[in-house]
Image 1 (cartoon, rainbow, N blue to C red):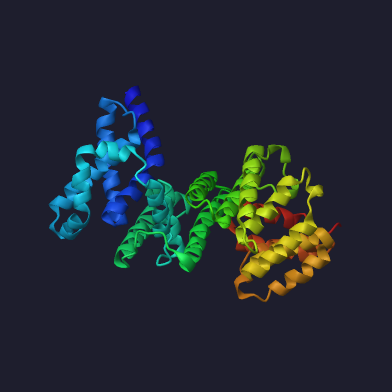
Image 2: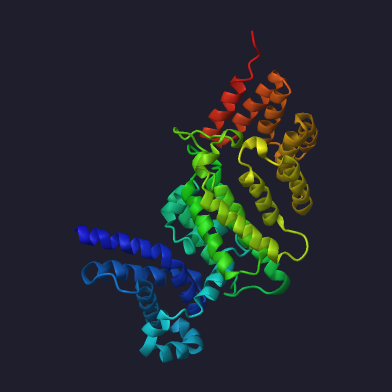
Length: 422
């Protein structure tokens, strides 16, 4: 029983690592993400049946790929509706069948296949939520249950979302290819957006009882590192990786012993992961070396994160440079959320009155009306200015808008701290 349990753990680990490569390679053959995933899972079932008694093969990834491709050949042969595909790909498969093990043992252009799969999973024909779910499923190797728990939705809801996404891709006949030219920049932006969305959901959970979900951060970081290997000449990819590495370095310091949030100013910087910081700064250097023109939004955000990482104490932070970087980021994105962050930097560099002046302009944006961080930051500025009654009201409003229980508690604590002295 112990051997079987060890083997099952090994299979689980192999699956998490190899499933994206399997699905990518199979999608190249049959041009359908849904069918490719089914064939990959068939190979997983075969491993679960055979490996406990026969042992884990020397090259488990190649074993899974060989098994999956043989099943793909069988399915194509059986299904008359795939006759055209047999004509298109059957010749190559027939020729490779005698040496298929040798074929899959080689790299087989799998890096290109993975990159194509990234662009398929993040295709703009899908909603942002569907892109994130499908990316975690196909490239992160997560089960439907794991993705559902990560995004706090029922498993059947997430299952339907994934099924609909695959049907949408098939119906739209999305090509299994990396876009070229101007389309590449636009589509790459969508890919990076999805990866950062996954990271952010792990870094600051929008809802639920936990302030962070570290597993989601790890998945996003792994996807980003894969993407950097697949697209080494894209500065924004390295910029995103740098941003995530540096932000992830603070994970251990962002929560207290009971899971309560700890704000940046109060964090014990000795708990920041120096290895992740060094990795992040190195990725930022790679990004900056590749820039031809103005830096993009992820490089700018990584530069801001680097300012925090380089400060040994909170008091050492170069807030003027951070405000300058946010000014350039605002020009790039036109985002009121970026302006809110710029207001924070301005307040730290030049005083809370300066930040408050910019913040008040943002209150007119419809998208900010129910954004809890606006009253949260405003409450902080007002508290520093000694306007405690107004600050308490803002913290209470922010608490009423957040869906995260840990954050609500923090905001109510700050509201209580604004009580006027008797």
